[in-house]
Picture 1 (cartoon, helix red, strand yellow):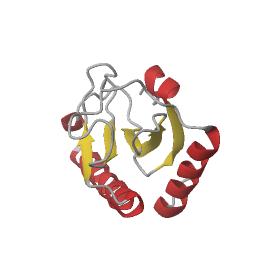
Picture 2: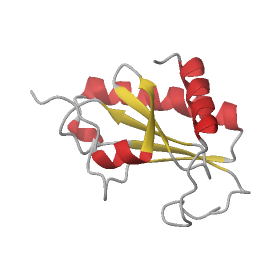
Picture 3: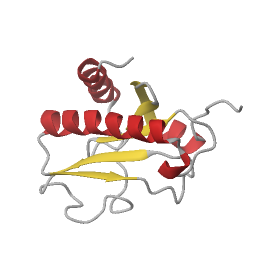
Length: 137
């Protein structure tokens, strides 16, 4: 069985936060929005339905935990959750906290504006907060 390897685009564009039982949690290096990504550590999977049912259920559990924390912590107006995969075929689950005051509201965030990378200390703070609340390493 092949081993899990994070897609090179996700490696380049994200910080690793830690691991849930099934998924690796990433922080997208885009400071305009609180934007986290769940990536199931299962090789060669592109769609949720490709996962066995037990892993689908675990992914939804992890998404729910992440979603609850994101909305509680960031106090957003809306949480956008998506599995697009047109550029990165590896199954990954975007969780983006949206605010009526954000620069792309109410439109999608993809390609709306040039990316604004995190200052290192802010990214590290966000990672530590997520690890603490979600109890992941």
